[in-house]
Length: 377
Length: 76
Ligand SMILES: Cc1cc2nc3c(=O)[nH]c(=O)nc-3n(C[C@H](O)[C@H](O)[C@H](O)COP(=O)(O)OP(=O)(O)OC[C@H]3O[C@@H](n4cnc5c(N)ncnc54)[C@H](O)[C@@H]3O)c2cc1C
Image (cartoon, rainbow over the protein chains, first blue to last red):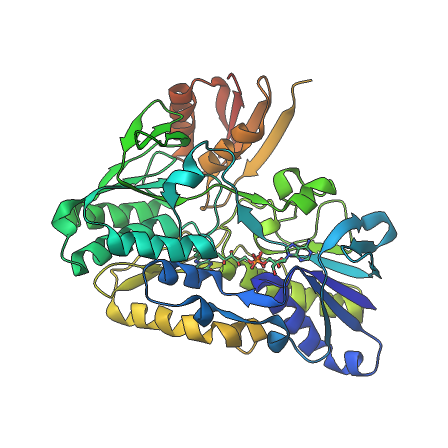
C-alpha cells in the first residue's frame, strides 16, 4: 500500500511519523510505502515566531532539517505538488513527477494574505512571517512611545496570538521603562475580546489592569498609510504610531487551483477527518475547512487520529477513532506567567489564573517540540 | 447566480460562528446568502448586531431544536 503525505509541516510530520511507527514492520518488508512531498527541506516551528518578534528567540532556534525529523522508513522529497488528480489517485509535482497513492493525506497549511486590506502590508508589523518577526523586533526595540494598535484579520491561525501579543507588548514596553509613554489599543473582529467566551472573561480584567484600551467589532477595511489610520468595516477608525497585525489567512493557492476547496480550505468531515466525498483522502491541520482553531495542537491531535486510522484501515479495512475536536493552547501572559486552554467540540475551556510554572512549561515545550514532531512526546 | 450556502458552526468554540460568517462575507458576492447554524447562545444576538453595523441583510433568525438558524445576505 502506498501512503502519500503532501506537506511536511506540523501536521504532516507528526502524522507520517505516527503511521511509520505503527506500520514499521510492513515498511521494512516492503508491503507499505510512505512518501512525503513538501515545499521546503526545512521545518519551521511557527509558534517560535512570537518569541522572535520579542527578541526572545532567534530564527535558528526554530528551524530544523525536515529529513532529521522523519522516521527512517519515510521517503522524503522536496518537490511541491502542483496538481491533485484525485480520480486517478495520483499527484503531479513541480518537477513533473507523478506519485500514485492508495491513501493521501493533505497537510499544506495556510498562509497570511495581505491583499484583502489595502495599505496593511506596508504599514504594519507582524510576528506571523519570518521576515515580519525579525522586523517587528527591530521596530519594538527602537520605538520611543505613542499609540500602538493591535488589529486582527479573519480568519487567522493561532487564535490565542492576539491576546498573547497584547500581553507581550505590555511586558516589553514595561521592561524598557516606556510603558507610560505607550497607549496600547487592542481591537477584535467580533462582539467580545476573544472568540472563546471564557478567555474573553478572563482577559478583560487583565487588560484593565494593564491599561489596555479595547474595541470590539473591528474588522480592518483599509489602512491610510500616510495618516496612519486603520479604518474598519464597521465605520470606526484607529490612529496608530505602531501597528501590529495578525493578518488574514487563506489556505494555499494550489488547493484552490485544483478545486479541492474554496479559498484553499478543504471540505473535511469533522470526526473522520476525511475529505468530503472521498474515501481515501484525509485533510489535516490548517488547510481543513473545519470551524475549529487553526493551531499546531489541533494538527497534532488530528495526526494521532489519522495515524491510528490509517494503520487500522490497512490492517482491518476499518477506521477505529474519531477526532473529538481537542485543542490545547498555552496562553502567554505578562510578568513571566502563562495559563492554558484545553477544549473540544463539546467542552469549553476553563481558564485558570496564570502562573510562572505554566510559562516555564511553555518555554520548555518550545524545546521539546522537536521530539513532539518526531512523535516521541 | 447568487449562491446559497450553509455553514455548520454547531458545537465549536473557536473561531466561532461570527468569525465563520465574517470569513464567508469576505469571499461572497453581493446577493449571496448564507445560513449559519450555531449552538452558541451569544451568536443569536452578535450576528444580527454585526450585520446591521456593516450594512448586510438579516433574512431570518430562528431557533429550532436548540440550534439557531441565522440567514444573512451580502448586501454590499
Ligand atoms: C506566530 C505564530 C504563533 C503560533 N503559535 C501557536 C501556538 O502557540 N500553539 C499552536 O498550537 N499553534 C500555534 N501556531 C499555529 C501553528 O504553527 C499552525 O497551526 C501549524 O503549523 C499548522 O500545521 P500544518 O501542518 O497544518 O501546516 P504547516 O505547519 O504550515 O505546514 C504546511 C507544510 O506544507 C508544505 N507545502 C506547502 N505547499 C506545498 C505543496 N504544494 N506541496 C507539498 N507541500 C507543500 C509546506 O512546506 C509546509 O511544510 C502559531 C502560528 C504562528 C504563525
